[in-house]
Image (cartoon, rainbow, N blue to C red; front, side, top):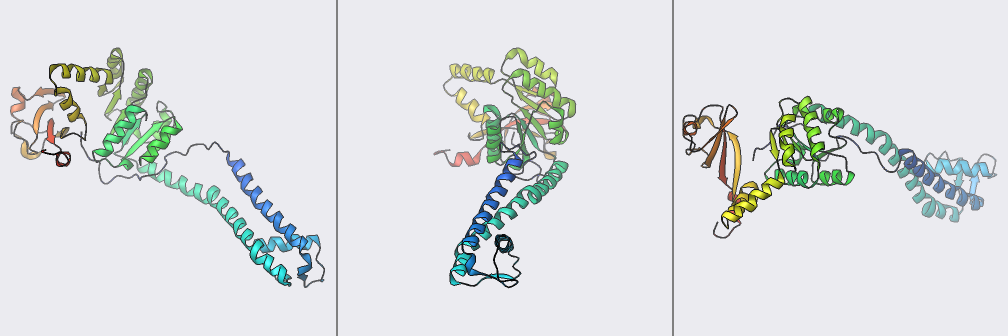
Length: 355
């Protein structure tokens, strides 16, 4: 389906809905930064102590070790009271060539630490709260394995803004891949109520479930359906015996990649181009596309082969029941009908010779 998301979305690209715990503990990072800063300060103290003869104390004329420490600290912090000052040419050269670069580096360390651990975290937390509070009309992808990542790739190719996609997975590498694609990401257990509440699952446009294991996928479907009774759910199920369980759990669409592969193989046995055309229909890269949409106002009363879009109508859904293009119900469209049609992909045709 080639439905574009609501342009009045309330989420932004590149924003983490939940920060991952760093492998490097925060306390270790802070200690390391401060350790480097004080090591640089110790170097400056040593340089000043060695060159103390080039310093002048206007108070008593004597430079003690305490004076050196005092002068180093006020120099590094750029305070400078003027009671101790470099007077020799060598001392001034040392201040310009050695001490000044170290002073700048120490300031960067202190300012960077304050920004990273106070300002940035506070800002990110506030921004995350605002994004989560307004998250709506988004697509939630539970599981970013082979099927999940391909689904996201196809959605983006069909025109969905990746900022409208939220990916939940427990694998840091998959989370990084989803973030690189421009999606909002959350590392966590998608079968957990709190995780799904954090991404406002009840306000989602649709939910795509592909956990890699049928039991996990079905548990995710149950959790989503419990929290979001009316949100459409599509799930990947690999064992045919589990398809009914997935539907009973609340899935609207159950996709079995093994069965679909079998359909393609069987189709290819009936004709050289059947499987090719089926794959063409399923992908945005094909010359034709399958699309589901509500019928337009001007199509009410028309037949399924008189669509305003110029597409070929295949099936309508009326009151949740499907009708094929050959059935009498499809010969007169009614308000509220959903239609599945085949439409041209003009962009793809333009790139194919003789298209």
